[in-house]
Image (cartoon, rainbow, N blue to C red; front, side, top):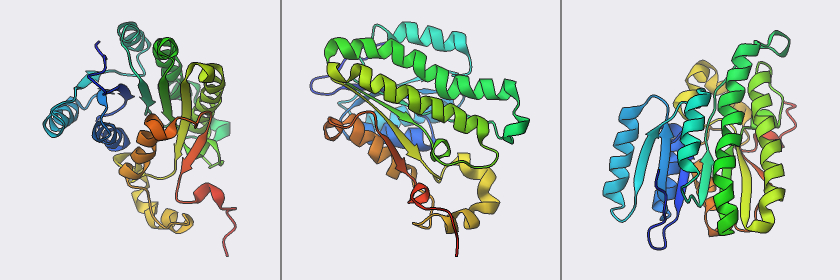
Length: 256
């Protein structure tokens, strides 16, 4: 796996970059002048189309897609062995596997798979990449969390736990790597207008009424913050958890 920067361009790895928020993030990073390597699980057609789109739009850039199932520990390990020799300036972890169930009815197998995808894969990939960032004394890590880890919601116990673990890990990594020029932050979206929200379609109007801004986020609105944190503007931001939720977590939740 090659990730050397071209000229003044830097290389960024986006895990989960073929569709939805991930694809919007890949496009935002490409537009900001980064070379981007991104992974996908099963949507090979979308990934190839995105790489071709970016190559045409940014002929000076390098854009590569890799298949990677984050639930497969052996596949993650093999991917990391290849990535350890690469020189990525940035790493965006965009993974969100749900495991909806009431807290008292938690299914351990489903919860452990969600933890592998949402959390353990993050720690393994970060371990593979952060050493190179520390040697270079420059690097950016952004993990996509969720407001579910900040505000309790019935049925989200396992998912919230994975994102809560992600936040705790990233904040610790941030303080451990800060003196070596590496920043680590978490972007915590609320409801984003992507295919992942399809199961909530019948409840959308009711959900939007509870969001102060009155709508779901466009993927590009969240991706813009990720790109900002990867770029020069994010140089003095580390250990932060930044909600992008239309004011949802700022509201007490009492309706009149």
